[in-house]
Length: 348
Image (cartoon, rainbow, N blue to C red; front, side, top):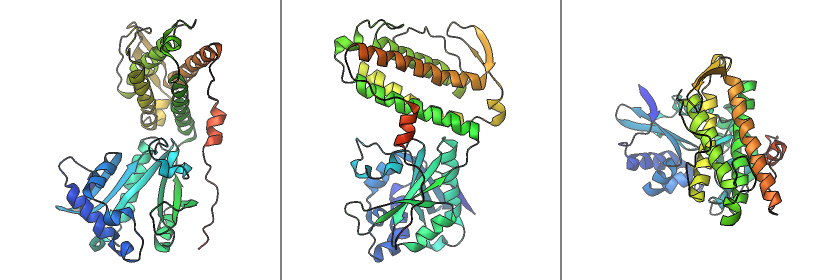
């Protein structure tokens, strides 16, 4: 029996790398220099550190693997700037997909693919993307039969072939998809606003700008408290922290910005894990003062994103009053920036 499970700390990366080499050897012999044909163990380690790796074992023998990761960052991964699907917040990326040649033709590849899709969906992703060599028609056909469709052709530096990027939509109920869109927008808008704030002098950043929480620094601390230290634990773990809304939880502006951005991305898997019954129910929690409350869970979730939009608006008003440029934060602007799954015909 073949068991598929997440990679564990004591699994051998040497063995995993050897499996990749073995599985991709036939492709390398055709002149297609897939990274997995020759990648060193150090690169395997780096890649699995960027996502969730699954492995398939038949007894003690490693016979398959697949990796699912989130979007690339344009400031760190300039190679993918021409591949917008790899930059989308709602798109997971599949890579290091391999089955031992001795086990091919037994359905293991389909099981690994389903494992990857199930994981991506559980994390709140709307799409799963991958790429393969354009001349590898048998691979393209296999992915197309699994529901992936080509969206772009690209030639990455150093590759002996053109690649076809393929994308599959992951089914989500309409309400959950809408909530996931708001979580994605919350992360996108926060990132853009923080980038603008990073250019401010210390004086402009910390001075009283007439906001409810006085300064931009004070308002960012409130966002951290409200969205991420009070509301997020209520949804994710059923925990109700008692914390004053004006608490300065972080004095260092760079650390505060990093914490804010990191935890905006924690909402999608929480939302994806909410059943329809749970979404229709109530959220029982204690307020920041410790008072018990029971409210519509859906209403509370909508409040979280509305509340963050409200305070981002205050900060943009302060930036304008100080004479600084403000980023475009409209939801429609984010949607216009995202590539759409249009039909793309591959010219062989």
